Length: 115
Length: 113
Image 1 (cartoon, rainbow over the protein chains, first blue to last red):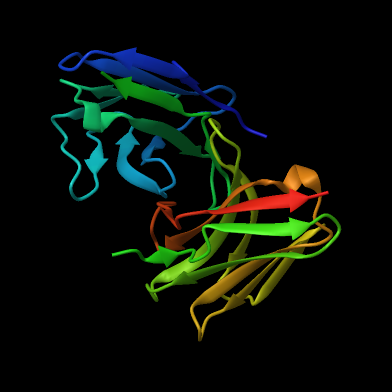
Image 2: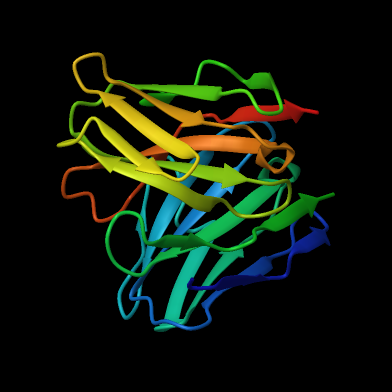
């Protein structure tokens, strides 16, 4: 099946710094990608929809100035966590649909720890 | 408000027996439902899905049942195997929702030898 990769797989940073997470579709093009966040023992929460060539759309309660999304090409979306705080520590996962409801492939996730 | 709920955080089943994972939803606009399996530190992988026009879908050892009147779906795994041990998420997509998925909290399934 289709493959979605994320980089880095884990990152530790200091409070106040910015962290960039990349999501790539390796063998297909994705005009749309989704970014999720998962806290320990909780559900995956959709943060935003990344749209190639246009602005991302954010879910209610997600600060667009804090979580910057850039969908630079049909195979790459980046999520930048700006001025990171310890409460931003979480597991961030992206997904890319290839068409249809069930053809949504998830990346392996990025574990962010903010000290 | 949690629109998709998995009320059992964990389930333990003996190898070879049937595993039944349950999921309830509240939003009647959902018209497509999916089950994903997730291992620690990995992204979810798609298992099986069902459209709201059906009440059952089967794929090998996995069967999903949908009861629209009760807003309830379940995933049956039979026979259960040790490799099935993982966290299972149900997810729902709204009508015309452009593949935006709403996930339940997950159920950790442990298959005991």
